[in-house]
Image (cartoon, rainbow, N blue to C red):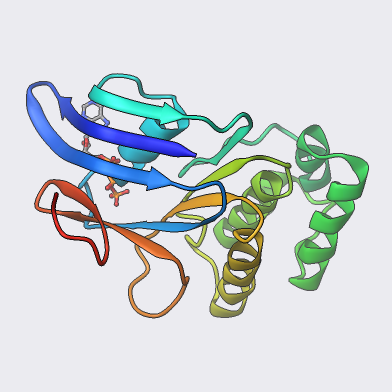
Length: 195
Ligand SMILES: Nc1ncnc2c1ncn2[C@@H]1O[C@H](COP(=O)(O)OP(=O)(O)OP(=O)(O)O)[C@@H](O)[C@H]1O
């Protein structure tokens, strides 16, 4: 569980956002939405514990936290090599099956893949690591419709077993879960009034 109480975030005296009260439960899907530059990535880093510069309290009780950043890092080498560095043999095999399904060559050098193919690899690398909470910063960037639908289904199913917090730009009916929205500098859970 993560509890957020009376949190305010500023950069160089510019207040970016405020979050009065929010709870992320042990299981469930939380979708963080809002316009460019409102602070979605910053908020995700704060929940993850990477950014500790704020006032108020964020109490993250999850033991194992995994994050897919907006710009994932890869090591020089093949797709398979990059996955094998993070995943056990069994999980590597599951990731490879998905890549095969979408025609991503696992023996290829990671730098030779398209942006969408690299995005799918980085998503699978983060997704296949067991964790209590998974933070996904725009996991759907560059993905085609069918890949996106597949990834969304994986995320929705998995959120029945662990907590998943996703930042997305995608509008309209797509991922189904609890929507956390940035509105006029306030972060609120959709369906709840300002407190
Ligand atoms: N380290 C930093 N120092 C100063 N300002 C920063 C820093 N990191 C982020 N910002 C500013 O905070 C604001 C929010 O950035 P953030 O990346 O969290 O937004 P976002 O909602 O994720 O945007 P996008 O939808 O475009 O990805 C931006 O104006 C950004 O320039």
